[in-house]
Length: 191
Length: 277
Image (cartoon, rainbow over all chains, first blue to last red; front, side):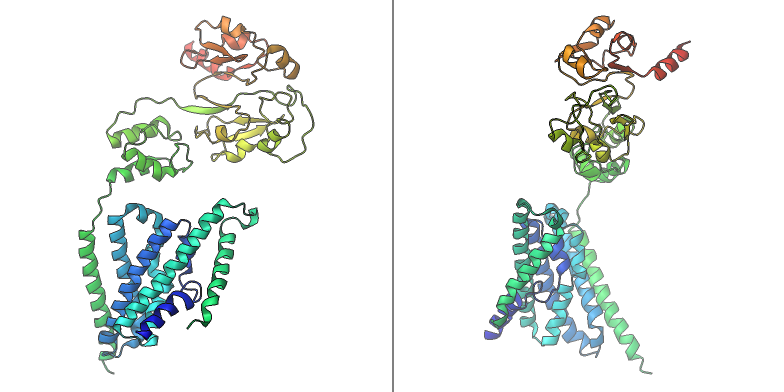
């Protein structure tokens, strides 16, 4: 039980994938204009991460290890992630065309979202079992969603402010992201 | 050499790929989304300038609106009647004839003809100049000629001519309306492409005032209104307006106007007369 709690706090706050590990910056900056799309992105990434953690653990334990093919882990994991992203894309296109449109090119780009691949490899390195892997996946995705939704909410506010001309758009977003990262540094002593 | 070193990775990765491929093929059937194929056809028929002249976000937005029936097939100002009929045939609607329009600066008051109130040395932009006592021109309705419309035009169809006056090149103009939007003086009007007679003045002040400011302004004498054989000229706010549906481009008003405030394209007139002869 304490391990699960440890993993949750660690992945959501202390080692937040975006703000501490600096993984998944592309969608973090790209789809964070509105809270609504950021939430959608967070949910899509959550699904992909949970499924990817589950599948990669299975593949690693029952295919790669018995065949002594551990060196294939990166390509095998990318294969899994790509297939999952395709699946998510189809589901979203079917169920919510609006979300599909607002996520745009960033949806297929989850494939190359290093946060997902990073998670699977970190899981293997930490030698978590299947359940802990999935929990870690969900926790990491929640951390990602938390960061992107907070960031989107701040950016929505910033839109209304009188930002100096030179800082308009991406510069102020990057400054915001850096300040958020500093704020999350405060969790460092927790675990 | 151990053959397994090569075969096992191939089989395992290949097998995984095959498995995922099959799963995705099944999912794609299950989650199939039917896209209206007319949308792609409409999108292809559009000019693709993404100028926003139709009021929708780009050509894609307009194509979707057309397919969903929210926009008329004649809604694209850039494509004109050719594009409208193409869209009409895709959508199964008769587009009818749309009159091609072009933007026109309705002012001829260059620096030589229209007096300056003061010397403007600020930012080279009509909107900025307009904030300083309505610009340096004594006529507060005229073209300031500092090029705000030139920068707004996505088609390079506007130029600034001698004497600080914006001129629109009708051949390049697509009637997207960007210049009309940005002009702080509202001195750009949309006129039919084949209209050869245009009232080139926007001044709504009484004749005496106009006479003191500009030599080519409409002095509200109403001579054109009386002279027009087709009753195609209306009069409002000390300014004459041509009703383009009634106007036959007979050039009578152009000849009668005492201040030459009505502009006629004489080149085109002569060509048409030669054609008649």
